[in-house]
Image (cartoon, rainbow, N blue to C red; front, side, top):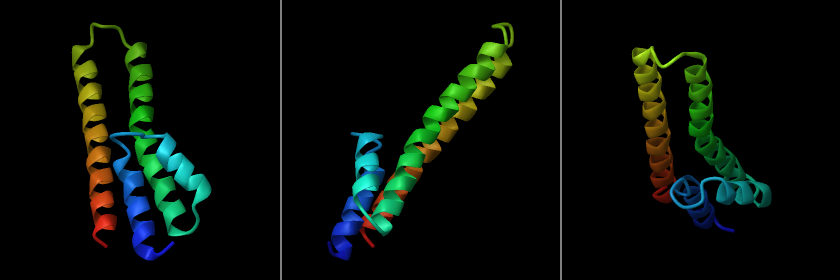
Length: 100
């Protein structure tokens, strides 16, 4: 494939956060080579990180009782901001590759 096709496929890996967050980058990561495989691996990592944040925050919140409202709100806000950050990062990297 030529460079523009690789860039389009790599950008779709980042954009797949909206339509196939795990399966599309995983397939491209396994089947592609070079920069496309590297971008697919990064996209897969950026899609998995918010899930890990939710699991870790759930474990932290389960350790505390419901009497600690400030901790619950703080952990929820941090998790929400990190998830939003990685969605915006995926969009930025996808657009950057699409127009490169």
